[in-house]
Amino acid sequence: MTSSRWTAKVLTLFPEMFPGPLGFSLAGRALDQGLWALETTDIREFASDKHATVDDAPFGGGPGMVMRADVVGNALDAAGSKTRPIYLTPRGRPLDQDRVRALAADPEITILCGRFEGVDERVLDAHGLEQVSLGDFVLSGGEPAAITLIDACVRLLPGVIGKEESLTDESFEEGLLEYPHYTRPVDWQGHKVPDLLLSGHHEKIKNWRREAAERITQERRPDLWNRYQERHMAIKD
Image (cartoon, helix red, strand yellow):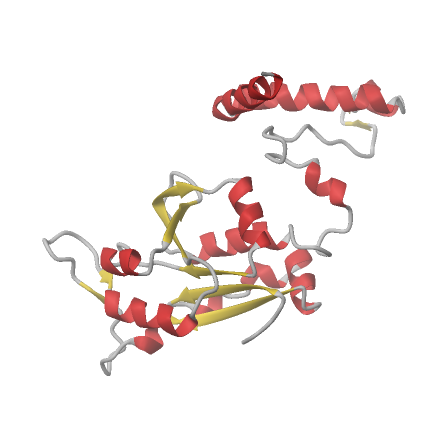
């Protein structure tokens, strides 16, 4: 399929899991409007035996099964890719907003969803898959992670979110976690909105939000806080 739209290609044993949550809210509306496209490839269709076998026991022994290099390789060949395909795995490089932004700027992304104990290493090497992790935890398969990655990219596409400032104010965009938000009612069960946010003094509100974002980042994500400080020191130098 030739298209100028941003396209997400997903290789999976469970294509019926898509679009799933991506068919609703912002991503779903954008999909209906043609702002992006979703293509799924059923890996099982590339199995060569009558049982459509996609996995086998690992060489060297051990628990579980491994997805076969020949089956996955044929699926990757058939899907094609304009960019380096992605394999979602806990041993991959942690995904961050900078990488999401870069992926959203590409014409398409191709995602391989693993199952069982993973994928034969040879196909990862042969196709040069970029290994990406959503965090230090294990899922039953790559599909939920793929949905998360696609959603993170889609919301950055032009026309998906109306106000650009909604994106620039978010967590990670400036290297900080986002500041707290409040709305009506002003007094909820004895908990009140900070007076400053009701003052209409935009410069003071801006400073309050910056200080809150810095405090929260320092408390909850010292790794981000250290990188934020290093970047600002480099800018000053």
